Length: 279
Image (cartoon, rainbow, N blue to C red; front, side, top):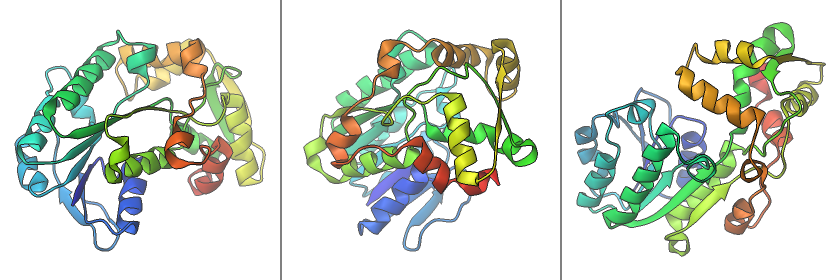
């Protein structure tokens, strides 16, 4: 049995489908009730209270660990989840980390994530670490304005990074959970090419079959919107990456193709598959 945390999110949902489709017994863990594929066991649990996971982890052969927002908070102890998984006899842990532990290693959340990577390595089970860059699904921030105004508002319109389709992250995670050849692997995951917000807007318009206007925000305008849903420090950190990505942040990694034997999906592929959100 494989336990998938964050099972109803952009990565967890396709991962659960992929594992179930491969004939695996899957326990999908999320903080709220949700629909899951037939044959998948769903458990409502909060990773911020790891003791509640013990019955879920009993008998599991592998764990996909995706941190909830609470486990990124000051004072949280996500390593406790790892320790409990090891004590429960889980044989393999695949951790969803972030490329930022390499490219910008000194931010608060990145230091904490690096410590969690170290905890996974030291815990005892086999392990693999996934380090994705920006997600294509972050474009869903624009869904309402596209639906209501056919407009995307974003800063740094002509600065691009190689965002990755979450379905590709899920496919790599499934491979790491199922095949011991990936034990000890650390995979940096990106899309096939750098793409700017203006180009993303054009891809969404093409998927819709109707024009979408791009409005370039100032950094201050963008931060004001972002701080409605995230701490100001994290908003500044994100804007630093979007506005002045380092060479490591614009590099296209070969790791998706190394694991899956195919190139990563493009942003246009993601937009076509997700177009209903923008209609």
